[in-house]
Image (tube, rainbow, N blue to C red):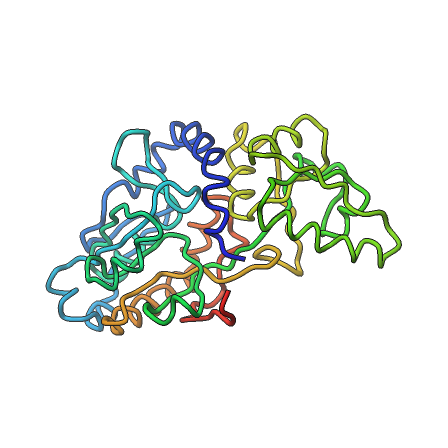
Length: 319
């Protein structure tokens, strides 16, 4: 599952939700509205300070510049968003994590918007040192960049608040009406599960397809379906923000904590800067160990997709 494969399909919904929510979260966003400049920072309520040993391990060019140039494709909620429409200030999971990493390493993580398909070429060309943009770590990209993996995400199930149908796994969707956006990986997931419903002696999932993700959400809200399947990060963010968090909730299947068909998402780092990827890897693990990462992910409703251990180049296939 490639997080970004569904990017254009959910942007309209998440952008609208994000704008409504960010207006009420300006104080929280203000924590990380400015880059740290290598100074201590408060991110998701956690004070992060410089680790001198990790700073010393950075490449000389990064230490001299005091900056890591980071590419990101905005908006893609909840990973990267604008604080306000028409304004350049950024917020989001990736941005917050970048500020925490910068504070830990004692340098500034300076984010700049870049169209997604141009990010890797821009790193190769030396325009950026790294990218934080919900990018799937796969073997093809590993040929030209190194990844420090910080999340694992796939497809998730969203239900109305309270989960009246007591849905806990994909198996519970058999014989039920389920909303999904057409032409998505999530539709393929439901189609593939039909055989398991039959094998269990149950009726197939009554798949209801919609042209837009927002239409599928409306069907769930109005009771026309009992669940909606979408990317788990999008589901988490929607559940966190829609009607102040009172409308929906995400089903967390213990057998698929990061979502169904989950794949690793990583910070892409130039292969010319192995010391940088090593330092980021160690800084990320330190932020995992002290609980900072969990609090950042929880702020955006997606704590379940955070890794428990930082890895490098964890992709196992060529998808």
